[in-house]
Length: 340
Image (cartoon, rainbow, N blue to C red; front, side, top):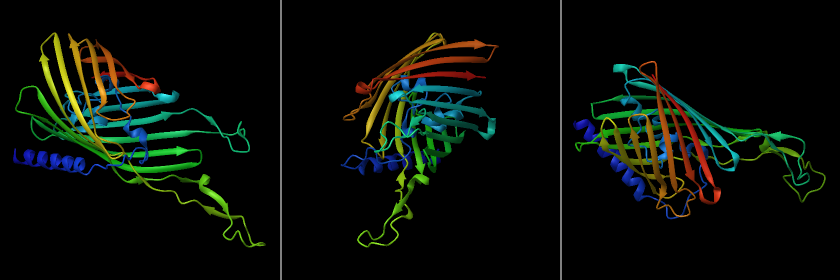
């Protein structure tokens, strides 16, 4: 118990210090790999992305890796996101319960931008070439229960981005905890996401022809040189949240959740949401994302889910969520979850 209290105090102090050191000037757009901040999982996003203290399906690997330690069985999830500007993201995650050795999980995120034509100032209609953009993140998580009420999880990951002939790599880790408080039905969750290296792009597109002395004639004005690319931090985010099981009956379940987030590339904000489940078969969800965040395009969310049991202890969950993005219209997500 002393160890648990010590861990909670350290995490709370670390989070509080990060909030106190928040920049007055906005740092939006100053980190690499922004796709790492896109919410994953139709169930979580339907609840307004207030999921750090819920974290009870494979998307917990994204939100709070400690959550997979509390699952008795095994599960696999496929999530498809119709993002803004006709972009698409796919998220795959699963975990395997190893008993006394904890729970191990894996996740994979990749993007689908589609092929785009290469244009230049001289040829604005295209050169006949095309290029692609790729965002990829792969992680392996491990979580375990220290006690019946306290869980901890780690999620190391590799991050990759490319555009045309430029590529960049990074490494990061997510860390999270879940704690069942002495108050019935109330759980505290905290996580740190994308704590790791800086990233920069490098490749043939950074090669230029340079004239070191333009004032002198007769010299070589076409010396191959390479542009120096800046390194950027990954989008690290601190989250702390509380979930409350307001109703927990055989036919009816209601869970409410609230998260506070402190990213290193934006101001602080809050997410709130809830989920109602009827007879463990049908669920509806609603929430509000980026509460108190100025100039945010995100706001209301809602979703629904349906569970179908197959072959005894095997079940399939179909989930859908809708997120309002104001001027950027909407984002829709579809998830298939298999528990076994």
